[in-house]
Amino acid sequence: MSTCPQYIVDYMHEYLDGDISREHEQQLKKHLQMCSDCRQHMHELSDTVAFVKSAAHITAPPHFEDKVMKRLPKGKNRVGIQKWFRRHPIIVAAAVFFLFMSATMLSNYSSDEFSVTTQPNLIVDGQTVIVPEGEVVKGDVVVKNGDLVIEGEVDGDVIVINGEYMASTSVVTGQIEEIDQVFEWLWYETKAMANDFMDLFKE
Amino acid sequence: MDALVNKRIKQVLKGDQNAFSDIVSLYQHKLYQICYRMLANKQEAEDIAQEAFVRAYINLHTFDQKRKFSTWLYRIATNLCIDRIRKKKPDYYLDAEVAGTDGLNMYSQVASSEQLPEETVQQMELQDRIQYEISRLPDKYRSVIVLKYIEELSLQEISEILDMPLGTVKTRIHRGREALRKQLNNL
Image (tube, rainbow over all chains, first blue to last red; front, side, top):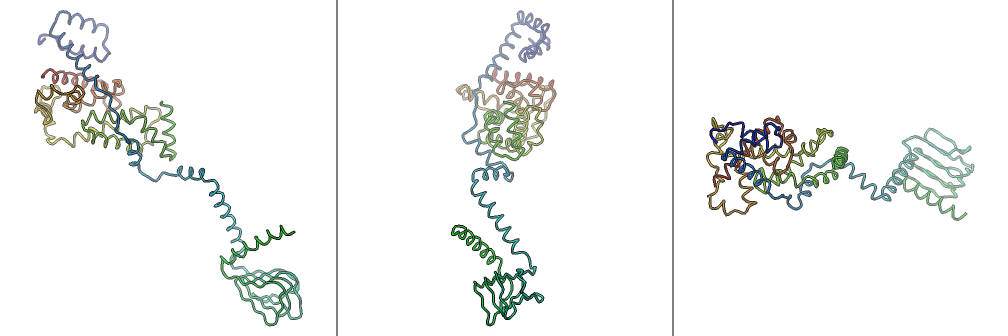
């Protein structure tokens, strides 16, 4: 074989790669028929290929997938949140409802603007609202961010938010409430809403 | 399958990490097999195969979806394996090619420390023997032989995975076959 041209071995490999040209294949066949050394070489190469190809398929160890998933960097879980939303629609609905509720209630509470219910016989002096002596104010009186002085009579409830309520010998037919905190205001609104609700049923 | 893979890739890119588990599930065995045949060590093969998936996940945005995903994934894995093999070599200066040996280096001639006595080798079970012979191949032949005959990939795919010209792949496969032939004949 030492005398055989190198291209014969190259042709063997071309043959094994499956991309040998017809000419080369014929030359190779012709040569192999007359040269036993090269025949032997070709056999050995084919056996080598068969040997490697007989390798069994190897499968990944158990839990491989889980281990990979655990090694992935965290942080991109936007979809995870979406899934959670989809799985708990009632909680989401309740949360959204509560959010809007508190938003509207807080907006009612408003910042620190002075305001008062409009009854014709109320006297407003700066941030102080006065119910004059001898007068009867019909309906509820609500004062926000101001003080209320009652010298006459109120035919209804009196509510003072963020302010002081002063009365000497006054007559108030309804309830008197002073509210100073945001939460108290929320609580009051909730109570009021519940009362309205009850009234609906009573009617 | 490619359509499914591309769909999962899009989901992962949108932030759905769980969609990646299908990709892992599809390719885990092939990827682990490449690593195991290259590294001849179960622990290392598992570690490198996992690392390859993690890197694929992190760099998924750089993958061109018009191309074949498996080619891209195998490329990551083979590169990691080759890096690991290089780090393992105790005497890296043995890498120097010996003149006139067709790319064989000192390492392959010094008869690696892994080489076992003849009788032991002949008593090996066939599968152990195959793994042993593959692991004795110099690593540049080992990668092409594994991809060609164990994974049964085309020469064109191998050239893309290893990022080398088709001609180089052919040359390495030829030399790899010759090297294996000699190993088997010596016994």
